[in-house]
Length: 255
Ligand SMILES: [Zn+2]
Image (tube, rainbow, N blue to C red; front, side, top):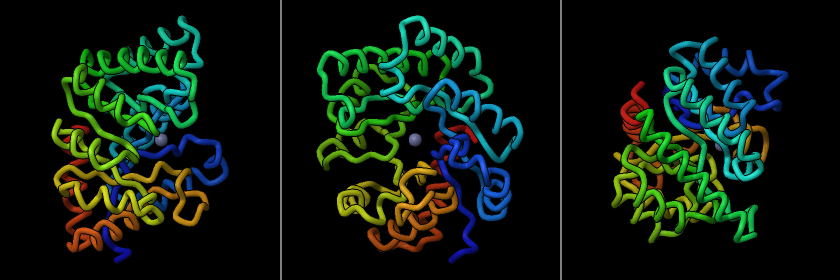
């Protein structure tokens, strides 16, 4: 089982939790994986993801965006600056993300409205630079899918999607990809969502260093553990889950 080479479509190796072992983690990942997609989420992480991708060309790829909690915090001019930075970096990134809505941490309706407004800006930016969108939608799945259904014209990836079955079906109906993480090991809801998601629409991710299988620091190759769980849920072989998820990732991100 351990010799199935996997990939991770969403992690954060630029996070300071990897400051001590980043090089050895990447060396190990090279043995066990086809590629890694580094997700930006804050201005410094966007730059960090791009520089990692330049240092590890053909193995690490970068996306750039602002996590909704960071997007809402930014001043109007800092927000515009980051939009410009992402636009100017379009040849160095393979996606816009993570961007979206976070109603889990933000309860204030006025600030949620600002999240939606800035989310829309990222949707039109992705459209303009022709990159797929990587969506964070914690507890805001209904609004996120609704906004995307009206505004997004390109490929959409729902990262760590944790919504209900109805929202999942709507997202699938719209042609979106659903990214499953190591969360599926501990979550009955994610296993249920996996049951309703065709393999052809699935991606694998860890969100490392977050979402460790036993709450420890997560590692990018743990996507294999998620694939093993999906294989059980869908009654297919692990190697087939990885194979199809790999093809999907290459197609979505143009790798
Ligand atoms: Zn993330």
